Image (cartoon, rainbow, N blue to C red):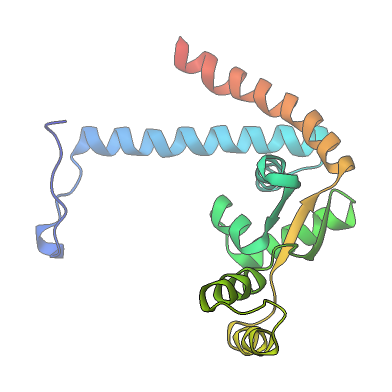
Length: 176
């Protein structure tokens, strides 16, 4: 694109958007907002789920064994860990997800790799001590969220609504 203007470090040199560019930008933001609000409203009305909850269920359904570490989930959906924790707590109350210790805790994996590298038995006391020290430094062991069978059924129903909404409010509009 020939219209690209380099970003500068100086506020005085900031290349402001011209009137046409500003119109395109604001139209894009407005369109995305209207679309996301409509998709969210459809999911809330028909399934009692928000778009954020739906996206979390999608990510869980795509993960091996429908389970993912909470920190990875937060990164995947671009939300804070705190927000994901609160959202998962709501979904857990409804039996849609469960939370538990990660079956492959990162510290345990690290310990096994280290034990392999230095040639000692993974059950060796030194490795156990190393894991305890690492846990004390890093914090609590990893927690995972897992999509339940009931949750998968909820997702299947909501997916129909979501995809229909994407077709009706975006694809058909973009195609015309």
